[in-house]
Amino acid sequence: MVTPENIKEWIEKNLAESEVKVSGDGRHFDAVIVCAEFSGKSRLQQHQMVYAALGDKMKDDIHALSMQTMAPEDRVEELEVNK
Amino acid sequence: MDISDRISQVIAENSVMLFMKGSPDFPQCGFSGRAVQILEACGVEFSSADVLMDQELREGIKEYSNWPTIPQLYIKGELIGGSDIMMEMYQNGELKQKLDAMKD
Image 1 (cartoon, rainbow over the protein chains, first blue to last red):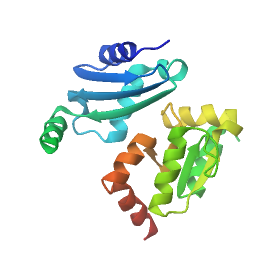
Image 2: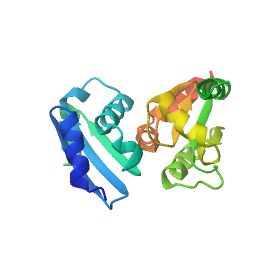
Image 3: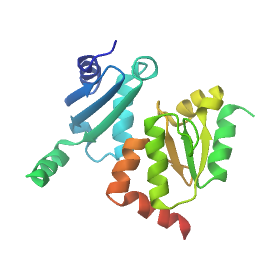
């Protein structure tokens, strides 16, 4: 069975300089991914980069993955907003 | 007509096209259900295709868009994304903007 740690590892291995937090119940997963390569990319492109990093795992092992992607500069803004 | 021609034709003929699991009245997956709710909240007419009824479409759409999950929303032939992106765009008003721009 797939664990959140597996997904974290798969993404971080194939997406340079990415910081990943994953939670999930074995079928449905939630991931927050911060990555320098996301800057200037659309949300769609960012998600496609994560899917590419996961490759075939998305087809076979992962049934449902919700994603929140952001470039490092977006994260800083987001943290301030939540203060 | 091979599957990708069939898909591009459907996408070209329907300005708001949702590929989903199940139908708007009977979504068969939480994410597809959420996508339908978002479009209904926008008050936009949309067409949908049930990939559970068509295995060739279910796999073909993923190849076509290089997007491995369902649902997938297309507006005026452009892939918008899955339910996560739809939700984010709905919340920040981008989705409404795209749909309004389509009407002019």
